[in-house]
Image 1 (cartoon, rainbow, N blue to C red):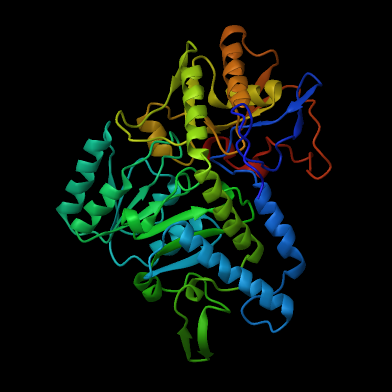
Image 2 (image 1 turned 90 degrees about the vertical axis):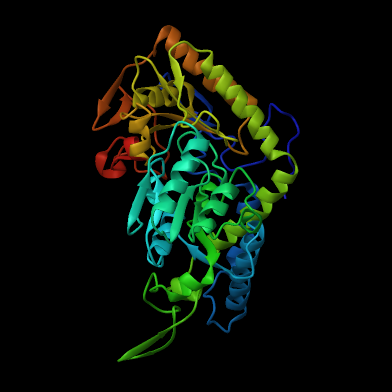
Length: 447
């Protein structure tokens, strides 16, 4: 595994793209500063090494007699054990591989035998799929929010409480163990959307009392198209198969189908063997980095970023609660006089800094925080450094003091430098353009 870097000015771990050079509008280039980990994290070197090791053996799984097929099958099922151990899965839990967190939550939504209680602060993936959704409006404090959840659970039976582990907008963490106890007290189970929490904090679902956990490889330094749902077997075995097809059955006749139990029940078709192997490799690497002090490193960088931005006149940091017990490396802010898309375009075009702008698939939360038009999100990860943080703070301060040195215009919700002389590499089709609505949809306001 790649050695951990001890210099606090350096990244904590090696990730792909760490030395990526990007063009600026003035004709120069600089090293890319990635502050978009919350959307998709770059691959850890340990993950790309695992993929390279497995690629020569890549073959069909579960039914092939060839040696490569046997190796691929063993790697796929070993990954299931690795992921289960990483999150402290219990003996009655099952690990189902999916495409991403959204896929996992939609899968579980088809298996829940009753109504689901959710908060209004959720990412759309944990707000929209649930049948019989009952929404609790979060309060200004975590303590009062928990009381509101209890009141809703006590008002009438619910099958599931579905909550985020950490807000994808502000990074604030909920008291998961307390919420699990609360859900169980009123006869409900609890699902944690761990998309933002798992990459930053160790989650032991056995210790926390969590019944279901979902997270994505692409946010856990394994951007190869795999996600996972982990949880109690009974609902998953009783639910309709998520996809009907090969691998999900025990036997098929023209007039009758006997479905397999989980996880095969919900993993029809040829699975993403490489993505699953990458996810397992990421779990191993992240666990090792956590043990070596990655959380403390992130907290130092987060505090440095927050304090730096707060010191700039006209910059406002978003916050849901005034008493959250913890926050992962996500800092979302606005700049007086500039729209979030314009700020993001300026940071990219003039400073080579990548952030996320928009509503972050959390429209109700942005609206209640008074920023229905969106905000700017800077998110940290294992490849982040103090130099990156200082560069971002300095760029925002320069924007407030002197304004942009280039012109920017909005086109269908997407801000671009005008003109934009930056070339695309050959592997990308520059004719579509990053601002093309057909290429991006509502990326600038919904990601």
